Length: 453
Image (cartoon, rainbow, N blue to C red):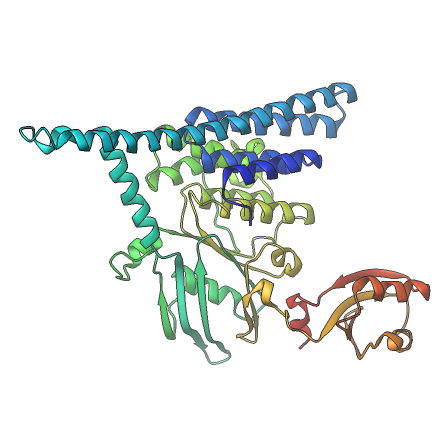
């Protein structure tokens, strides 16, 4: 997760520019502006910068701009990005300075007021006092507010019919602001059931399910809770009218009106790269873009909980990574924090951005915890390969480095070696024996291995 102070975030943008990654730099610039600026004009300016980069990139990709001119425009854009970034830092620092000055002036006014007992106390409630009180009130509210959005204790669900009996075994979960939780596993193992329970669309059979951050006065009012949950099912319902109109309407019914409505919709469209199809109709866009617009509609009104069932199913391999990085970047916000729980069969992609992982098999959680803690204390390394030799020959080649077991998994092999054997050493052995490797992945700390258990 990115650092949350402006200087550290600024350095991240500079590093991306140094590494020639302008795509990520302009995306992070948009998040940077939203996080640390309250200037509406800067909101519009950052959208323009982002759109300029996309246009320039498209022109280069299509070959409609000369190489020298492209390089010149890129250098100009980099200067523009750096200057804009610095202006955000200046604005942020100035706001802090104004606030500190307001506290100092308030102190002077309070001392003077002691000698003016004839005037009412209201006369001395200056704008500085009010600003201070509001600031401290908001700070206390943030400190006292729990960060837990969803808390489930041994929740379960049982389906019974004449032909089918399915049970989602008791599972405990905790979803906190700023986190992404991935629910993975094969089809028919309870992923959608769990997501529908969390979204409030399916009642539990047993257990306790609460929404600490979403419950007013600790009362479970489903009407209020559902107003803070964005649920996107795998089968997306059809939209009517233009996509842009739908985004404005969604923002409006969630209390975002006037210029804020215009700015927020324009921002999310630009942030997710949807400008080209903003005026299109639902039946005029691909399944992948329908998924992206569904994410835009969910995020434009700033919910606290995003529940997304199989978001990668209709995206191509290039779009999957960008989609998840967009989601990760938006969730990094402290200004408008939320939590997300997503289901997916695209294991490695979601593992790369997930804070927590829930692996379901036959309705039971085989793993439920932090992604960083999975197999942290393992006693072996596990590698998955596809190569041009038999299982028997492979075992003979790898015995000298202590390979203890090989399992077939479709056309691949799962190999278990001592934890001291790194992936580089493992591959070196195979290379020395001229084994042609078509596919390799280190799954030592991936829930991929649970598919084989």
